[in-house]
Picture 1: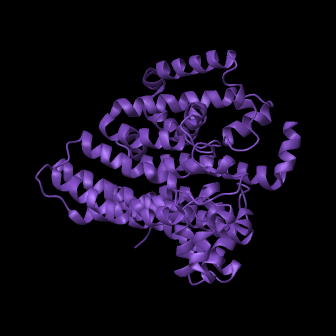
Picture 2: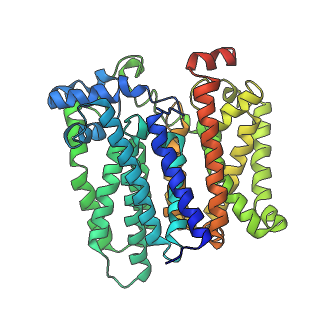
Picture 3: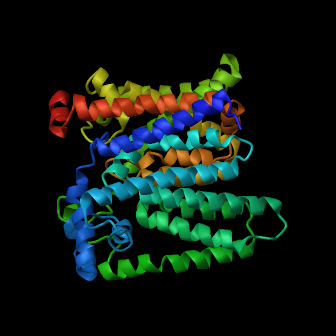
Length: 450
């Protein structure tokens, strides 16, 4: 069979992106600057678990980690390459590559009308994600969460399909598997607790029958047993932590608290604007200038006006004082003009417009999925972009009900060019920023003048 020229180009692009991914591993790419934490955090914990499980669990806080050690335990006892650093980091790189393959399989199942090479071009965008790559190359635990998360979203989609049939026949295995994979995702990344919350909100607002609700509650209670046992063992939801991590002996109420949500709203919205920008460009191309502007201008102008008014009162001045966290847009804003955050507010307004559109488009699905995510991710004192990457892309393709996907798949070849080009520029910028412009945190601090 002779392949068409376009198909050959797509195969070449997939190969080149895959090559760049593994090349990044061999060149020790650290495009987000967090790779070095592996030697201070993940690796000592994994080795300690290999030596003494109970001692490590009891003294977990001394390792200066406040997450559930699910991924560390998996690596210590299931990953056969956890005894040697280079082999272990290669294994996590391969596991992350498998996540790309599974993401493609799920997309293929959901969008059967699309060419498989187009599907895997969409999936390959995560291989260009700076945070996904850094976690993969340096043996960090975040990508385990993303693996379980996308599988959970697939089963969530299947449950929705069963509910839409409204024939009373529900596939119990889909419910149990969703509860299991979403529990694993939660254990790997605790912020993903929003997914079970979103799930039960969806069931409530979409009139799920008693069978689905009962099966879901029982399944979650069973899969929550390890978490309850860990809380009982520690005596709290988190281990005893050093004072500099948890002031006054506490994590919740210090680093993580409800009061941080308002402060994080502009940053959260800027993340949404950042990741939806190429998708909006695709919609703009399909709709044309007038229809596109009519769709978004009012919500964008309203949001930007509110942010500008708040900035004149000084309430947003904290956005000009970040040295850690805040995201890529805020850093670019500082590079343009130190302590300035107008570009961030511009992207925040884009993010607000996107949310406004999604909430109005399909409230019972999109609000129940996105609102718990925004609330949970607003709790941390420092909001890093890694929390949203590649989360927002996964949610867009696997969770949301929106015409934005219709426009994306209308001319999928062009859409993939836009999306991949966007992430290539983002990756190149991240590599330059961390490997050439500011090779250390101290250099960044000196540049900011702090």
